[in-house]
Image (cartoon, rainbow, N blue to C red; front, side, top):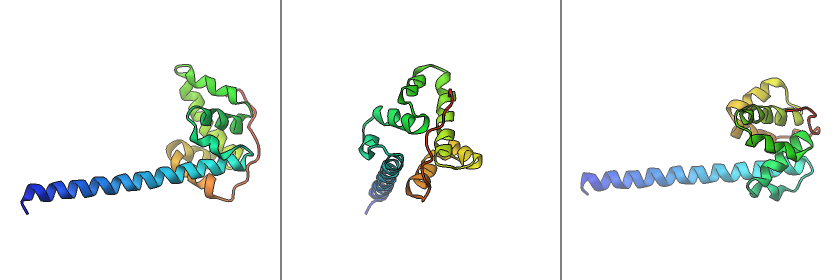
Length: 128
């Protein structure tokens, strides 16, 4: 087997392995978000529909889904996005340490909230 064929085989194997890992991780994230929604009393299937899932997430976090429109305002969307992750942690009774952790590792914290035994405490009432 020539060297070029060996490199091509390794590249294909490496790419396939990474693709399978990414798909498995994505499926786990969808299941975790589904569980987050059901813990909050929402329909789990809402996590599958783009834009609507953000609306439902804001309804879970704030009690009003229309606040997700603030994400359309430039610069304010950064503040609202940061507040969203912090409020999600607080809606499940997590402290500020976990809330800050969600800013840097949102996917891992989504898995923790979805598959963990944390109870939904209700929406957080505030402007942002």
